[in-house]
Length: 81
Image (cartoon, rainbow, N blue to C red; front, side, top):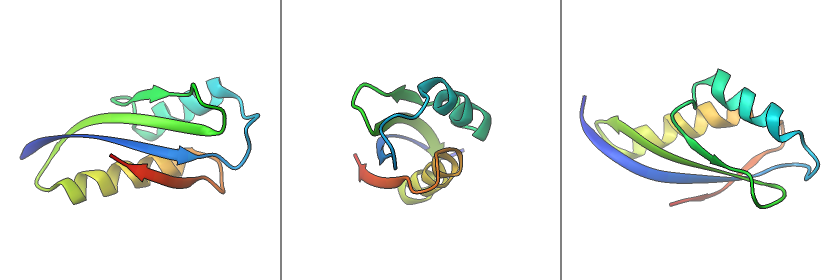
């Protein structure tokens, strides 16, 4: 199973008036049900993960791809912590 990695992803949304419930539902349905999601800052979505894998790079890449597939087109990754 590998090591456990804790990391945060911060995404910038293309619009600040998006439906927060729809974003939460889309993230859950895409496979980010294990993330703690933060929507407190308008126009930003933060996701905190603890995931297992062989390398941090691999785990972060998969989580990023999964989250971006659920978020609106035009969403950009701003930060990985």
